[in-house]
Amino acid sequence: MFKKVLVANRGEIAVRIIRTLKEMGIKAVAIYSAADRDSLHVQLADEAVCVGGPRAKDSYLNMQNILAAAVGTGAEAIHPGCGFLSENADFARLCAACGVTFIGPAPETIDLMGNKEHAREQMKQAGVPVIPGSDGYVNTVATAREVADQLGYPVLLKAAAGGGGKGIRKIAEPAQLAEVFTQAQQEARASFGDDRMYLEKIMTNVKHIEVQVFRDAAGHVLTFPERDCSLQRNKQKVIEESPCQLVTPAQRKELGEIATKAVNALNYVNTGTLEFLMDQDHHFYFMEMNTRIQVEHTVTEMVTGLDLVKLQVLVAAGADLPLTQADLKVTGHAIECRICAEDPARGFLPSTGKVKALYLPAGNLGMRIDSALYPGATVSPYYDSMIAKVVAHASTRAATIAKLTRLLNELVISGVTTNQAFHLALLRDPGFLAGTASTNYLETSFLPTWQAVSRKEAADEAV
Image (cartoon, rainbow, N blue to C red):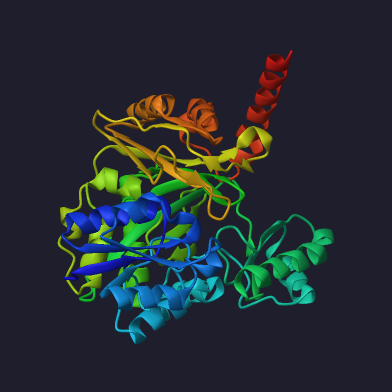
């Protein structure tokens, strides 16, 4: 087992990983930017190394400085968390070259699944159903027009190397194609250094369903209960829950079999998440795979009682998975709200500043808040706006919603504006309560109504 692990990340995910390392008796090394010198993950770690300036490219994306910190502190492994370098195959290769274990899959696997078109082809070969789309890349407007005509509008244009909603555009009709294609390709080139594109048929009234998987070097596979991540804004998840209200036990078994087939075909090692669209007939279509731990892994932990980061570390150290599929039990329901420093009433404008007062509710069963906040902490403009994850678990979905509502009502974060009230309104929404919301529900149904009410309330207060 590793004696020392460097955590190549920041914020709540770094705090969360460091806590598991400490419970495992492993020394934790934090890295930080000049802006994060006083951050909680730095305070909790056994050692901390500054790796550059405030901007991510100078610090949390600075591979050479991070590896120098690992080697210099004697860290035997690096946990990349999520975001930043967590799905960077070049970084994983550099880790191996420096004799440091990358806690994640092999770089070849990251490369393969990081390119969405290659991933589609690999899954098709493995017998995994995929969303109808282009065979290969569409790198010119003329080719895109030809493929779109074959698929039928609307279509979704996506960057092959994409992620985080970048390089993705909906094309509703032929007249939009040329302008939208150029915009998306430019964004992909700027975001990923790769402007290869592909097209998918847009599936309407669908749910976004994902399956967490684990596979060890000996080929043992674990598949976890699905997560419903359908509530999204700008292709970014807002609320996640497990299990999905609409997935039956038989369909859950089917998803597990599909996921097992996929990771075995890849000879995958460590954890990852297969993402699917589920249509109204409950057919599942592969979209992409994330080759890392995800933000929403918390809900999976709550319904299974397993520490997924601990499993990551064990598998990376060469151990077999400590349980079988038959051992994995699913209990109750869990829901996570992503608390972000932003103002939903003003178009989700980011908010920065110093946290003046903070109260994270404690006590009672089935509650969890992952955060790196503390009174006096600074929410800077340099990084992602998510500052906390509020998670509730109970025996039923209704009880979980009640518990989560209570947590959000008690939560106090002052000094920065957050989307706390937005989440409370969403938890009361009939579409959410029914559990039937599709991927476009939040933007097309909930958000316009909520923003109209918010504007009216603001106007009434001003009078």
